[in-house]
Length: 226
Length: 227
Image 1 (cartoon, rainbow over the protein chains, first blue to last red):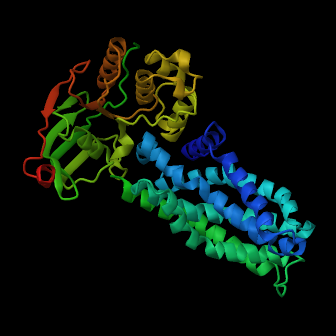
Image 2 (cartoon, one colour):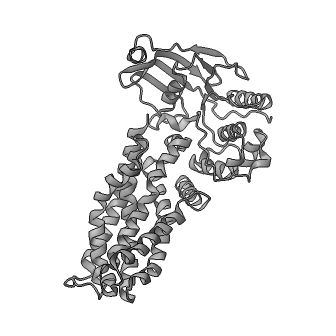
Image 3 (cartoon, chains in turn purple, orange):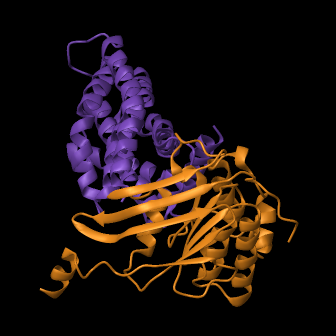
């Protein structure tokens, strides 16, 4: 297990050192959330109603931000060769990379979300709902994104391609994440669905992608080994 | 140098038979055949584009083999494990993260390759490449030659019988080349094997030489270049 820990701690260090993407994601999230009220206008009721959706879209884009470089940087500096020759299965290596990326960039988003919710006029339970759904949903975003990230290794220069490839796959996560968050949002006009139904589906999506993501990612890396 | 210790006391053997390497439809290397036993080394020579790096990557299992077989056998070798787990591959890319310190880079490598096969500590390995004083510096501050030496220090962290060295002497000064020669000799004395691709004379004793010719003449690459 020492290899797994090595990759995990290396990804965390790289994300927080100079040039790392941890704070960049958070700032991007903040920027998306802040420009929304300017676009929508000073309608507090409307903002409160669409607030969870804005936060989710911001989190989704911020999560994808650093993903395209995750494995491409390793390809360019030769770390990928080291990973191929290590006794650690490639699946676990991808899992460790993904977990590292989630802790470094996903967790700051979850911590930032309650603060940024204030810009969108969300009340207490709505803030709790958004934070909770982001906590459960962002691992799914990371591990769906990581499949795209490993595919980018074979195709050089795939930054935008990653978003085009990955965004459609994240739609189910977005749907269930936002509807679970809206179930706790009193300003939401929709007929109230029970919170647990979309929330449990969201949990399931996260768990599935936690398994499928590393396996598919490792397969993509093996294909790219050339 | 301390007394070389025998890590692999049993007969170990690498046999490469009629290996052909290709990219797409183009034949790059081969057919190549050679045998190597414990304590032996092989120098792969040839002009640019002869496929030296390609051959080393294929030996490490980083590239698929078009035809032919590569077999690493011995009592210490698990036949089911990938061949790469018995190789140290030293390539053109050093695999070092510029933002991390020398020590952090080496610790990552040592942990990843498993503490079970531990050979030297990070300080000892850095001492062997005369870089003990840089251990807390970020790799970004090091010169090209020093980065190479950090990458070479990795060879000493974990026990792996087969060293695949791609241009190991490039960017190294004379003193470092001598240290590399001593490292390679110690590895051979301890029962390891070395295959090095180079067009420079290598420090240390290289027993056999494999000359690669560019396989361009009869492959499609030639047409694409000239038409």
